[in-house]
Length: 487
Ligand code: ADP
Ligand code: GLC
Image 1 (cartoon, rainbow, N blue to C red):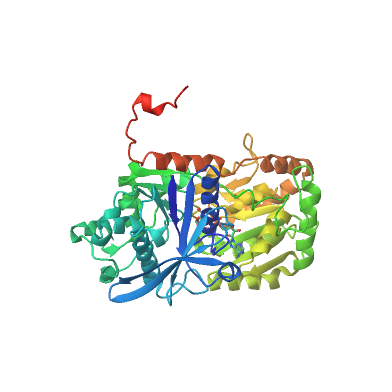
Image 2: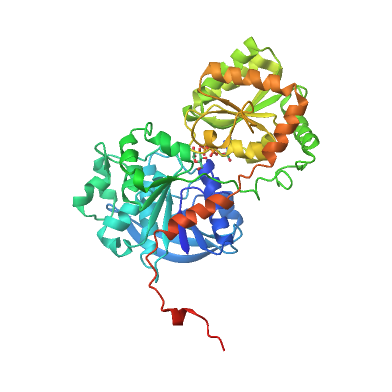
C-alpha cells in the first residue's frame, strides 16, 4: 500500500510535542512491513532543513482566496528517516522558525493543505490512503470530496487521527473564501456551531477516524471541547489505536543523547549514573527520590497546579524529595515554577524551555515521572519513562489509564490517582516517597516496566488492517490464472 501521512510535525524535522514523535515513527514501521509510507509536512526553517540535502520534485501555483502563491515540494535525498520525506515550501507563510503560534496560523495551514492536495492532484496515480493528523490537516478530506477542482481525487480513502481534540482550528465563516471553490450545499460538512471547524470537518468527511488510545475515544463522548455530540454521532467510524514508541530512538541501551547506557540487568547502576549527572547539574540531593515533570506547561497537563502541589508536599511530607521540572508554556505557570526555587532552595530546580537532550537524561536519571494531566489523549512520556525504569505517577485518564497500572493492583507498576487536584498529586508524592524506601520493591518494579512492550508492532498492524478495509475490493482472479505455472 502507498500511504501519505500529512502532518504539521514530524520528529526530528520539527517537533512541538508527541504528534512529532508519532509521525516520525509510524511511517518508518509501516515501511518495514513492506508498505510505502511517505510524510508530507510544511517546510519550516529548522536545523534539519539546513543540515540535509533536498531535491525539488514539484513546483506549483495555487491560491487561498485572492492570495496567489507559488509552492515548491522538496524531498530529502537519502531517506535517512526510514521513509520518503516531502516538505512544502510556501515562501513567507511556512518558512518560519516555530511550528505554531503565529497570528496567521489559519492562513498558513490552509495554504499548506491546499498546496498538498494541489500537488497530489497532478500525480499520475492515486495513493491508496491519505492519512491526516489533527486539525492542521483536518480540511483535506473535505477539500478532496467537495472542492470542484479536486473532485477527481474523491475516491482516495482518508483517515484522520486525532492526537488532541482540544485544539480544533476554528475560524469564522468570513474565512470560507480561503478554501478552493466548493459545493455550497455541503456547508454543513465544514460547520460546527456556526463556525468552520477543521477538526469537526475532518471527523465528518474522513472515511475513518482514530484516536490515540481507546479510553480517550470513550472520554470524547463526554468531554471533547464542544464536539461531544459529534463523537457520539460518528461513533461507528471511530476507533482507538494506542500509540507505540520508537524503541530505536528511546532505548536506554543505545540512546544517542545519553553518555552512560544501561539495560534491565544494569538498571540500578545505569540510572544512578544519570541521576548523579542531573543532581550535579541542578544542585539536587542524590539520596532523595528524584521526581520529574517534562512537558508543555499548560492546563491540559495539570501544570498550573504543580506549584501548589510541590509546596504542599514540602509542607505536609517534609523535605524528603527532589523535584526537577522541564517545560515551557503559559508565562504565569513558568513564573510560578521559577519562583518556587526561592522557597525550595536545594531540593528543587526548573528548566524553562525545550531541551530534547535534557529530557532523555531526565527519563534515564529520574526515580519518578509526574503526569497529573487533566486531558491525555495518549501520552508518550509515561511510556518513555517506563522503558528507562522510571516509575510513572499518573492521573487515571485517557492513554495514561490504558498504559499504567497502580503498583497496589495485580501486576501493577505505577502510581495512579483519580483527579488532577493538589490533594491527589500530593498523596501520590507521599506514596512515591514511601515506595522509594523499599529498594527491593523499586528494583522489582523497574524490571517489570522495562520488560513491557510499548513498541509499534501491534498498533502498526491495526492501522494497516484499518486501511485494508478501505481499499476497493480486488476483482476476483480466476483460479487458473492465480496459480503459478507448474511444469
Ligand atoms: P503532548 O504531545 O501532548 O505534549 P506527549 O506525552 O504525547 O504530550 O509528548 C510529549 C513529547 O514532547 C515527549 O517526547 C516529551 O519528551 C517532549 N517534550 C515536551 N516538553 C518538552 C521540553 N520542554 N523539552 C524536551 N522535550 C519535551
Ligand atoms: C497529543 C496528545 C498526547 C499524545 C500525542 C501523540 O499531543 O496530547 O497525549 O501522546 O498527541 O499522539
